[in-house]
Image (cartoon, rainbow, N blue to C red; front, side, top):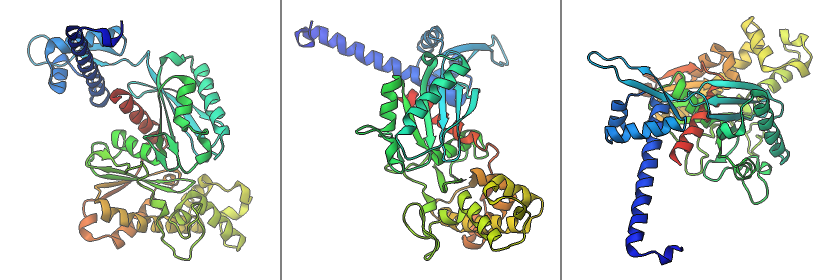
Length: 410
């Protein structure tokens, strides 16, 4: 029977059922969101949080337990009377796959709904501006499922973080344009191939989500996270407790402000960008230039091709003057750039992340000194500058939160 052949009374019943189903699904999502973002809850606590009745919450919990979304974990603490039962998200049955794709090495993880990493490994490809990356992503997903002994049917979604100008609304990476198949975004193509949700997020924005949920800035309302990595510098922004992405998702490209009018050519085609002075790649380039000029350093004993960030930091920790000076220069320039962001956003904290964060005080001290020099006094009086304690995990966990949030909202 077609919709047009229904009697008016039948249409009213159909509409009412549709409205009831929508309300029920909305309440289910609110329960799952609350348990994910706020932790274990009792029926009474959930009733208060989602503004509905005890019988409704009880029925929804029973339904979600039958579907294995949630489990009981025992009684909660109570001063008087019978102790209420606590509910939490099921750490088994449903998982996510998180891919952290970078220009110098990539990682994959399978994470459960309690944000516990149940499987993790390096994946042997790097971000390249080529459609070949599509097959590499598919192969990596198949491989980690096989090695982890988790079935594709248990995966509720896959999240990918990578550098570039990424529009979260359409799944396009506008910096690495050739990874998008013809007439499709990377996300659309992957979703059609695996028949499960895919979400793509800029790596720096994933980092600030991870830091704000699990790291040093947890619970803070206005925070900046500067991602000092190989390809350049990105700025993650939390304003009034929410990640700021901008109208197209491109907010935070601090690395492409011009800081040196007659500086080096940047990968973006402009001259003197902050990236050319503060990226990990620029540090290695300057180290090699200094060694070719005959500057004294323990690094001179190493083949130029073998010099990497870890070695530079190692000799800096051993007192090598050249390594310390170059790290200091990068920190100083980074601090100048961040001074602009401090005046714009008035944060309560700046968290330093990325591969150069491994340099610790050699990077954070000159950043702080530059901010002290270039910022107005009132902007820096309550500003904390910290090196991330999460490291690379911030991106994985941030992508996980972004993925779960989108799945539970949609």
